[in-house]
Image 1 (cartoon, helix red, strand yellow):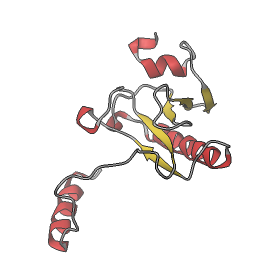
Image 2 (image 1 turned 90 degrees about the vertical axis):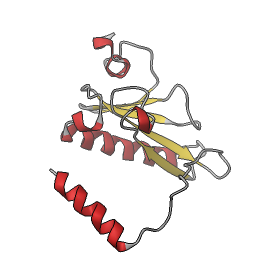
Image 3 (image 1 turned 45 degrees about the horizontal axis):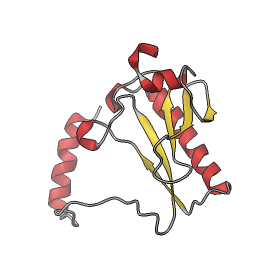
Length: 141
């Protein structure tokens, strides 16, 4: 397997996969454990374990291919009333495979999938939002 990375091996065609589409920099394959039929993984051919390791060109290509997959889902005979794009960065965020990848998940009423918000989910006052924005600006590159 290519460098021990599952997605690198899948991108190289070294492992069995159900290919949806590919470009010079990105690959889209069916997820083997789909949330709903039509759930696709899109990832760059170049290995990057986390979001901050990702080359801008690869990120752009993955998102562009992900948008094309979403359009294909809407146009297909698969049940798709909406689409979620999901990218987990880091173990705490739910990343299980440490090669950055985008999930393109078809959604439909009553599919049982969803996001759960924590107990402190609420509208924040402007001062709190401004303070958080100021902290982020300090690290913005």
